[in-house]
Image (cartoon, rainbow, N blue to C red; front, top):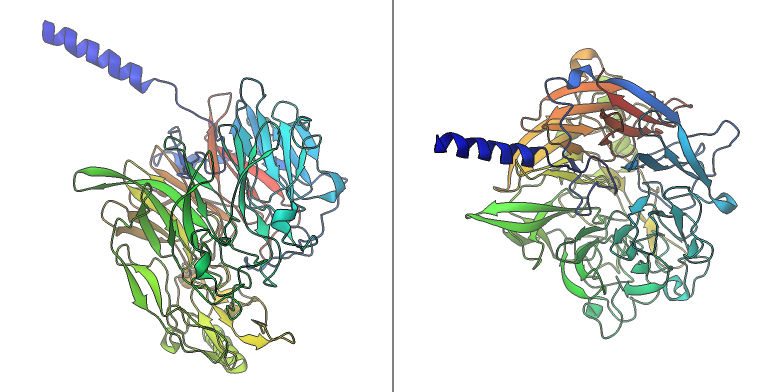
Length: 631
């Protein structure tokens, strides 16, 4: 009898725990500050995902508006039709019955997440453009209401009431803060400085990265700053290029640190809120293909840097590329947990564009698996370049993307495509490459990964139950060659180019050209690899090639991985445990960002994505937020 009572009590307690409320919203870009992009929702499952259907669609382009002019910033992103508008890379947020989204038409809107109807609209002044990857929600404090924060192309930081969409007058000047302060503008008041990614809020702080120029070398600083979320007052600044007396200053030869641009966080900051640590994934220095005017390792470029969230105090760093001359950045950082030797290690997974995955202890910065400094090629005919002789490469996990090109790798999917690639090699004098092959002036190096990167801003997602870190991988080279400029510096001879047929968008090496990969962080092994995307312009037996993608995956507690991103205009669902593709839906245009999922007021689980395209062949009137749900 006692056993029955105890069993009943335990059962009741387990039921109570199971029924405890969980967050069904998506309050920040990666859903949580650590960047896991994992939702506890489980209404849509591997068993019923094939029944997903369109729920509602919101057209972001107002009928009376005209597209904004393209950005003046240089870009290494997938070739886009920039003559029309700036494609959205946004992930919507859903909090307390409202969806918040930035649009490519100078507006931030709040929608009813159950039906897509507009709740409020904020139009930016002076034809400005909100950050293309979305906005940040701040829950407020006792003396401050919940708010929406976002940066703009012109360097403003804006705070809106989450309830009404009106600027909050107590912040900055009437709700707008000018981030182009003299300290970061480096004596170049007309230099480019804005934001393409959302800021990150932590307690009473809003922490910002920036989008700055990639060329020329001198311009606005890429410093990371924290502002008081109530007033806009500057609280702390972290110098991404160390000043005299600061740690790392000696990694810049002579005065090459002065007025240096680049070295910025243009993707998403992540935080360990429990430990009060913010992690800064920092990009390459400007100019990012030539380092003759900045000899040295160039900290903190291409580094993950841990700082004290409240003060910006430096804690530790790990540099993934020394003296970057390939634009390899560091766009991806995700907090993970590694179970090893009977212990759970709080860790962070970081990747630069090579798609090398470094798993580091997030408290100390030490690698969890062995990392070696590997000798790399240093041969170049650029007289004043000094390539770094070694680069850090993890022994485990293995590289997730190819790092070299040999002529024997040339694609032969069709005779016509093979002939095009052979002609391209002859015309551009394209040569083979090894990992970290320096660029040259006498020939074009087929560098893997290319300008887009093996991974990019979408990064990965983490399922702590399986220990799987899941990320989409590109296989697209750039055939890059340097040319001397009149001022003695070196730049790209043909600009940002890709090793493919630009008409058919078929890369010139053997497929697969895109994959979805799961890494078991508890072992460092690849758990599975699935082809991601199809080439619709190839004959049916040859279509399963994988495609170039942007954005990243989203995971759910039911064991699903949702991802758009591919230039074949699909959104897909995969089985997180096995990598099997379970569902796909073709849209009028490609998704250029990352899907998300939430529970509406009706109790229904939705999957939402922004499809504005930007790829060749996308529908003109397809600038939409599109949602799916079960019947």
